[in-house]
Image (cartoon, rainbow, N blue to C red; front, side):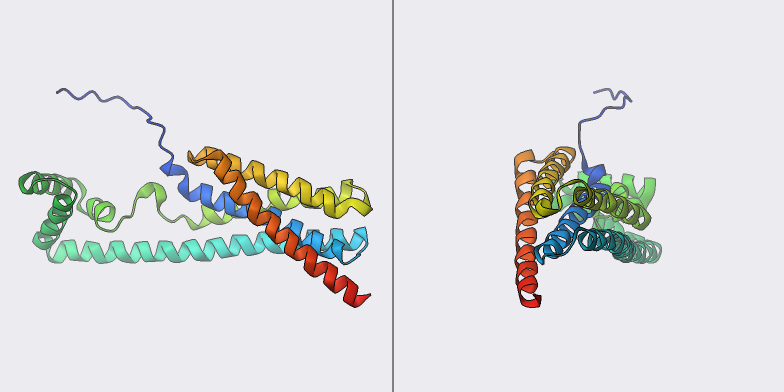
Length: 235
């Protein structure tokens, strides 16, 4: 069978995993944490200015927390990947025969017969031994490998976008209706976020929307309860 060198796109979305996870986490946390903070403070009978101050403070603190947290977390993953690759490179240099057998065994376990598994392992080793072992032994792929700066920026920017929505609501809605408006708008935003994230990842849109909305509603309900209880206790 002849092989034609043409590019094609089968619609896979695995290349989106890294940035999509960080983006969804940032936007979701921005909406939920800021809206919950605003609702909790408003439930304690605080004035609009105090509620707005709490929301803006939550936005700034949350943005820095998300960026720093993602950077540190993903940097740790990247360090682990680099250490694993360095160790594997040393093994390839010190004992190439053993590494060849190891790669062959991996392909046998995946369903190839012994001869074909050896041929595949030999060809891939000749082409790029480290890449073959990184992919098939260690599970490290270029398109999903750790990228700390990308994750940090994605989380920070999407957190700002998410957190800005409930903060803007505080400015625009009547002071006596802050809780109901922020809660309703935030749940709508969360449902849209869950649906968009699911669509981008090729998953169930309804399931994605329901999952995100449920946890957001729970968080806002709990903070409203705490704010109300504290407000009664203080007054």
